[in-house]
Length: 300
Image (cartoon, rainbow, N blue to C red; front, side):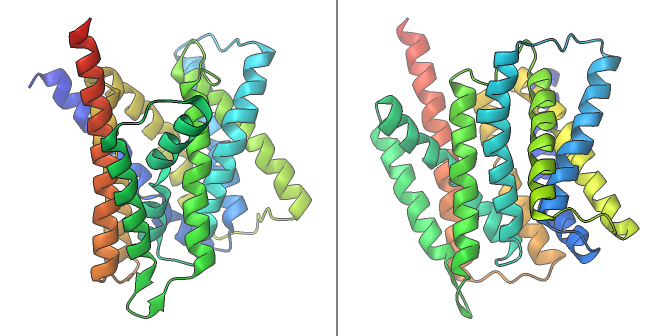
């Protein structure tokens, strides 16, 4: 394996691990007086400032058409914000590791959307992955004390579905700019605007926070959003999107481990089995896509 590949693997693992730390720091922010709206608002707002500064330092042209900005705001930011907000709110009701794993039904959701709306041909392997994912969700709904909060489960699942819409929009070219980081910059700017409006209308923005809460939100914005995004994009450039997608399954694993080790969350057999099945569905789905691309390339 080349040094370039090793560096790419390191970038993706570091980015995915950082994404997986979001639940831990979100709960620290909650303890410091923050709420879900405030955490997500400052996650995107600080990230937008950071990415804007990064692009200015690199002297990257940020000019895009008005139509493209509208597409990014509508198809990207709106669904991304709704997904992120749903996921963070779910932390109030169910363990963070479980919430993150539930969110990872989005690959299966993407398949369903592509088959039903875009008439994409579905492979038997994808059907198997869907069944694995469904079985995992059923197992995750059970804990030693009984059934997990249904509302929390719903929020975790709906965050995955909303994120899937965002992924489909990206795949259809709705979010594509001259540079992926430029797209991300406008995405975070649009997301910040949407959250500011939502926060003012719902009176949900809290500013009287502890220094620990501000520090936790700043970490999420800079390291778990802006820098992780740049690292992930660099990693994709080195090892390819399929390999990066496989490695990105580190995110829910990190969330589950942090929840157990640092937040005192329990992990019983049902949760462990459900987590394993969902992760298997993500990995198998990605491997299926990779094999399909290889077969297509060799047939040309």
